[in-house]
Image (cartoon, rainbow, N blue to C red; front, side):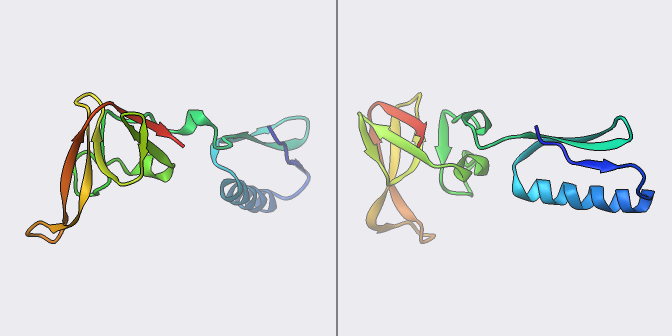
Length: 133
């Protein structure tokens, strides 16, 4: 927790502007969970709890996930982090969609396209593991 101490003898408008600027700077510099202030002993404290990209901030990986944003199984928040997929113990980097419970991954065919111009997907079956890398 970091504290910024400002004497309350400053006029109210200066305190308000200073508070606004400090909050903007803290929000830009760090991933903030909570920002608050406390008026204590003629001082104004800005308390900040930091979220320093720990593993608790990563969302849980779903049973089924797709890279395609048009898919109902696409979750954009998960793609803000690096994810890895293992199929039968071998890490794959070309996975377009996976389902852990059904045990398959889909990869893009090298040249074949569907009628909308999207790559055709090939389903490979096996033991699927998803993880954050």
